[in-house]
Length: 162
Picture 1 (cartoon, helix red, strand yellow):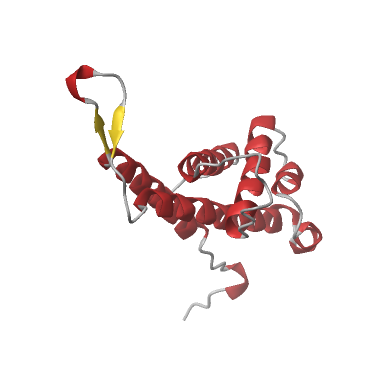
Picture 2 (cartoon, helix red, strand yellow; picture 1 turned 90 degrees about the vertical axis):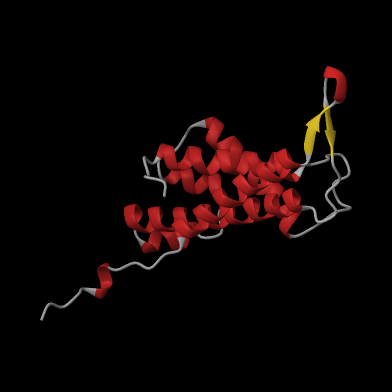
């Protein structure tokens, strides 16, 4: 009988979180496409059908939240694997950008995406609807930015995306 070394086994939902974000993003895009049609007589622009169920908006929220769950799980796994649990504990609660720099990511475009994402996620998840009246955010646009962010981070670390 062979024994498995349980200390080498890591159970993580990181790729499930990634797939949920990606699948919700595709669903969001499909919902947007199905609710628009070209204007008649070749006029420029679109006629957008109102969706009382807000399908694309809901899917965008799922993308935003699960992108963060993926990012948190991924950074945890990478820091523990590359720097140790002690280092992770000292970085737990720090900004995504600080954790990425620790791991060697200094690409300003990625760090900028993370900074924007952090602000968007905070506004959406902890809804502070009346505190920031200077910026109007569109969930679908922010979802696209979130997907771009997690894809760029996975590419940076040369991870095979599922």
